[in-house]
Image (cartoon, rainbow, N blue to C red; front, side, top):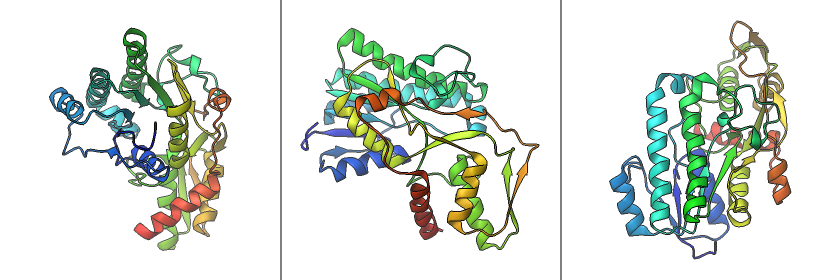
Length: 308
């Protein structure tokens, strides 16, 4: 990629796509193409075909997807499978049809088998059963990886795939019904502080461990890999460091300045005991994360306070 390259970011308004856009703009790229959902329905073969024919992007970051929490994944199973397959099939196929130089497909760590050994290595893919609640989404993402590999194998396309860990950052979702644990805790502690509550309740025992990466670090990794990686399969993107939910809650409690107690509702499920990415492959290519978790949470909390 050079500064004049024509780059299309699919999903530019989401947390991941917007971070990639910020990174590219900070590096001096100005020829960035975006379309809102109202302007371009990525599920429509006709619309996507016409868009690629007209715009002829040289590079594509495929960060568009139908996403949601456990409840949404489990409730709208058909939509999560259909919508994601259609979005990625159209973007990948018409990137090939219009001679895109390089495409990056972004997946999710939920592609791994439910009981895969920790930390999660790339070669654990398809070695066991998936987590049932988000199986449709995971199957769509696995299909995307395999599609990139197939187009590379059959047509010589330079299409690559990356699998990010749990992310947080600007443009995150703070809706308590379907947000992930980190933004949900920020909102819970902030509201407890402003409403002078005595305690904040955490679901489960607090013992499960999770890995978190700032979206800006992910964007830096994507930018790095777009220039330094051209192979089939996929690359995990993460920090390689995890933290218990209880430790995370205490960190956020301290950052927010909430003085009350923490309580744990142990009748609620803990979920998977641990979910950590093996980032050996990423680090061997020459990339390591930069934003420490506490620093990252402080920055997103400042933004959250301004908006609320």
